[in-house]
Length: 212
Image 1 (cartoon, rainbow, N blue to C red):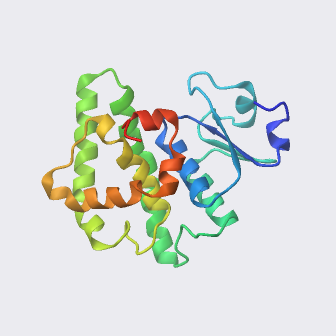
Image 2: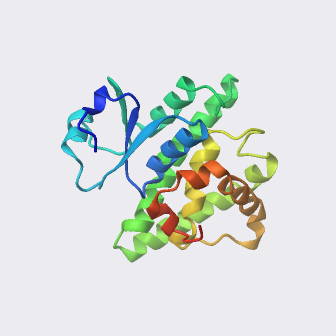
């Protein structure tokens, strides 16, 4: 790590957990927009002192852009999208934007915690319930995946980024989609084959599938 204080560096600094979907989607936004960013992978259970001084909640991801420190994942990705407007990853239409924000919040607060439970809980019943819950939530959205080229949109967006990092993790979570979920499988093939998605993967995330 550089000796230059984090808030004095010329590029943004992202404190990131190499296995966290919330961190992964920030890294993917940065790749899609070609944003210069120093990614510092840290152990979520042993956070460095400089991060603890910057973020009172001691959470990941944490983005530092000189004097600006952001630690809400959705705030981070929307900030990056607005500061670096090309390519745009959020609709300018107020209704579409509101729907996207609502979906982003749902993914962050309801879906990603299920991933964490499946990956880390030692309670077999809790894991089984979380796995079934996540699978059912995806299956319920099959008509949405089938309706537009991307999720609720004709264009690739922050929602697709957030969904892609989830779909990448399904095999490692022991979740298989039924034959009737072809729309989700086709969508996953499309978003996961993007060059920037592949480049966004940490070593731990590559190991989740071990196919690259």
